[in-house]
Image (cartoon, rainbow, N blue to C red):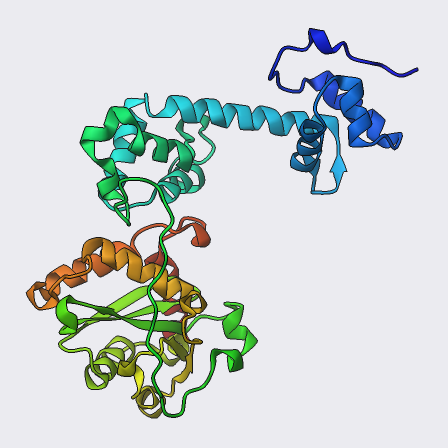
Length: 341
């Protein structure tokens, strides 16, 4: 005999209950469609579909106890997130890390995975931090100024175009070995230039694909000679196992890339024109550098110590893809392995 819930007894916008989840499982086992289950429970079909897809065990089986446990966990985290910034300790932590240039996602992940792992009272989601930054109550504090893009409002921004140039001995990124593409070994870098005021000075930047390590050197001019000098300065002191290849942008300043092969035995590859996403790590690192040195910066006025401090700060910032370890922690682990062999 079918059980039918009384629609008028279900409060508007109420969450699914444990007993409803048991019935969903029971009726699914009988082969009932989502539409029929929704009708029997007095729910919308989309509610049933969302519940099943969101709470499947290992992505395959809908099991009511597992579904209820996931619901309770999300509820606890949401409650903690809403309450968290009212906690003076968490408020100070979040504000302090924002001032250091950490993103909301990094702050949230570091709390969850490292600094206060397993402590529900310290859990806070990145969206809560964004709401805190952009809330009307904090409008006068201009907290958005601490974000990488310094956006007054949250919005997407497009990238810039690159110029097509002819580069001798250019090897396409499509010929790059799978071991590089899959980040299966350390020592493969991505390189580009950050251009300063009037294109008269800048930085050459490099990003290691496995460890997220960022290195950069000053360019007195945006030329091939200055760029190859900066690249050699970055790589020459590294063990060979930590400098195997470099994937570069198509700028005119990269035309002497063959010198890396001749002097350091590094293979060079080039991304497709207008495809900065193929060097995503390097592009992301450059955006962080722009956080400290916005467009229009005259790098001739920036001291070597300032550059060194920024590089050190970037490499000591936890990263989500490194399970919230820092690039320096991970890179030094590989470096020790190379020097001990």
